[in-house]
Length: 134
Image (cartoon, rainbow, N blue to C red; front, top):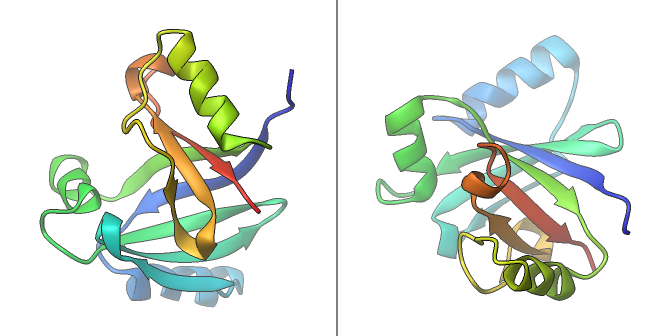
């Protein structure tokens, strides 16, 4: 059995710039990466946090998943990401066990990593992202 490593915690925010003010001014933390993930309609900023990271997510469109999340729940934790060695194998194991993925195909995210989301109904109510870093 593969050991799980926390890769990042995704936090939905209305404004990355406003959120970064807190991290910079109060904690002295600067983002290590910032980019737009066009197919997700989101801007992401990654902040170091021990061996993991915090991923701030701001919608770039009103029809993005993050915009809908903010509308329903407000700002806050969106997902927990765990790093795996082989994303395709992990996704196939989940499928074969009869569990639900949010989307059936592995996608490419911020920093070019591969990812897939596991449906919250399978994980005790938490949106779980599995990540493979190449």
